[in-house]
Length: 269
Ligand SMILES: [Zn+2]
Image (tube, rainbow, N blue to C red; front, top):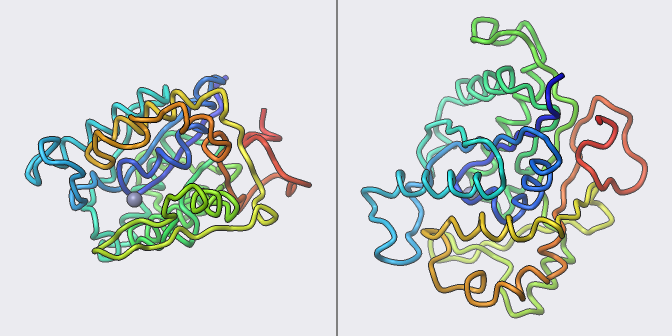
């Protein structure tokens, strides 16, 4: 009997932290095997504060930060697809899908999480990973595709979820004086929100906010050392929008759920 298995596929170290760190922690605590797969080491990103890394050692530092975060979530050590940050739209797409198919057949997840088509805020790397993971979800189960990979035995994942932001949560952020956007190339790219009425799955991570916060704090080169997570952690963890994480069910081999799901493994355990 193997443990229920959750696999999350993202583009950069820290993509897992803000919207899924509580979910990863919760399912690890419930006895699931939790795997994080990241396409790059975030080596092209800004360094939040001098002294935390240099551009020369950034890939190593960010790998270490993601390993630290996975420990906080009690997830397994992360897997890397070994692509370069910022370059995912120009890599060989078929090979990228093949790498994910191989990992899916090896790790045999029941549930897969990745970005939605919006890429959270339209980051091209996120959108590329969304496409690869969505295609790999299907092809991992097809014996005709990638028959020469080791392992080649097909694996059918039961559920595919996209991590999404709720519009209500983004509005609350704006009211708190935070800009619901990410700066890219000097321009704020707004987070894309879905109305709660269109969100299929809301995960209560209230019991896992400490692990989620600890995971976020591991990503020091992304958030710096002086920020709300360090300075006002009680305020952060008491925010109701920090205590729930939202997903959109994209595909399932089970009956489509009625009403809002509160468990990614609903129907599987
Ligand atoms: Zn990212």
